[in-house]
Amino acid sequence: MIAMAMAEGGLEDYRDNLIVLSTVNHSAELLGTRLDLLVDDIAHLISPRALQTFTAFAQGGLPRTGR
Image (tube, rainbow, N blue to C red):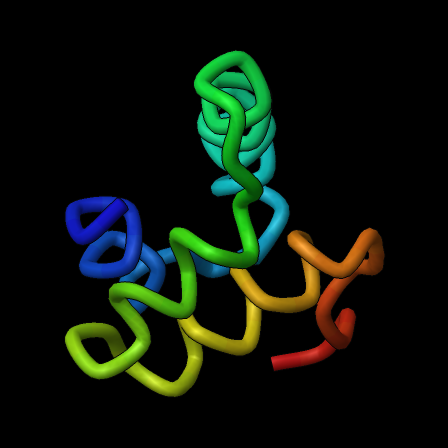
């Protein structure tokens, strides 16, 4: 997830990370945890932009469409 957060800063379109977030979300569910808990654990290590995208996804929404 840290690598995904690092890549987030270079993405022109936030949707480029959604497939990977979907995979991580699914894996978290298989392991008996939730994506929002994983995001909380790394929040202090990632950029505000990545945190916003990851949090919005974990909450079932999408981040803002314009950047």
